Length: 167
Image 1: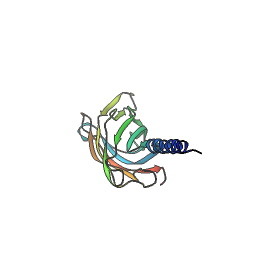
Image 2: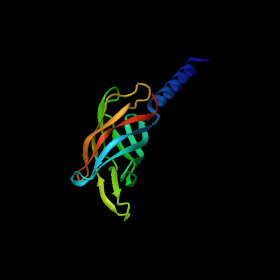
Image 3: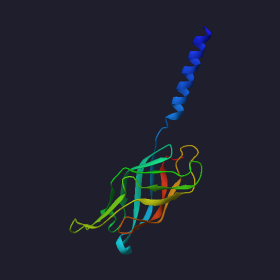
Image 4: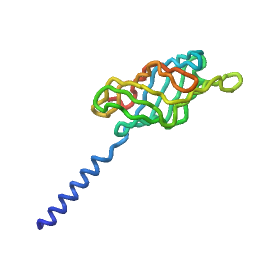
C-alpha cells in the first residue's frame, strides 16, 4: 500500500469516527409519580399519578406522551399539546430544565357534562433533577416543586421517578 493510499484511509477512518461522535442516539424514557395538581385559584386539588414518556438526545428532553390516572377526577384529566421540549442545564450532575416548546396543557373535564371544568396551558419552568446517569444521561427523578404554569396560575407539585431506562 502506498503512502498516499494510507493517508487517504486514515483520513476516511477519522471522518467516520467524527461522524459517529457527532450523531447522538436518543434514549427513550418513562417517568411516573404522584403529583398534586390544582386549577385556577388553587381548587380543586387533585392527587393523581402522572406518567410521561419521551426521549433525551444530547441533553434535549422531548416529552411525547402523558397519562393521568388515580381516584376522583384524575381519570378526567388529560395532558396534551405534545411534543414538550426542554434542555438539561447540567449533563453531569443535578440541574434544571424548562418545558416551554409547545406549552404543556392539562384539561380537567366534568364527568357529567363532558365539558372542561378548567384548562391550564403554559410553560412549565423550573423542573429540577438531582443527578444524571453516567450510562444513559437521564436523571433518576424529576421534581415538580409547586410549579405555577399558565395564565390561570395552575400548580403542579410532585416527584416523578424514572421507570425506563432502568440504569
